[in-house]
Length: 186
Ligand SMILES: Cc1cc2nc3c(=O)[nH]c(=O)nc-3n(C[C@H](O)[C@H](O)[C@H](O)COP(=O)(O)O)c2cc1C
Image (cartoon, rainbow, N blue to C red):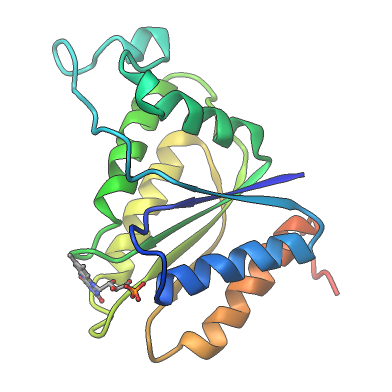
């Protein structure tokens, strides 16, 4: 079973990177085949036409050859996913937001690649921890627009790193093991 980890983190070290690794290890321990995908090379939405663009009717992005089509296909192939991002300005990282802007438009009016899929949301904040909730709320709204099913919301900062890292590992593992709402998997 494919477990997609979609990361907005531009860094290859640090807190958010360590949490991404915890998701990866947890999903693997639960029997899934995890894959990490970053989206920082993708362009932003061009907001074509009168604002709705061709994507509203045709369900594809005219500029998808920049890697967007491939990223969408990776999400389509995954049965479960984690969205993970550093908190920037109380929001998700710009690259992830840009990708989600395009994906939401393409999937508008149809089930799409996220419909009915379980998603783990992880936001990693810095020293202040300000903006953790608004960041998670922003990801929550995207999931509601695309029909994704939120498995859990996990906010992390330098004060709670030790126990939240365990929670992230456990969440990814129990998702991969097939936990349904209300169940406990030993
Ligand atoms: C442009 C920018 C904006 C940031 N905004 C916030 C913020 O609003 N709240 C916060 O707690 N941390 C903020 N941070 C800190 C990051 O969330 C933090 O670097 C990251 O999540 C965790 O650390 P890492 O960089 O070691 O992965 C910001 C960092 C950058 C670069």
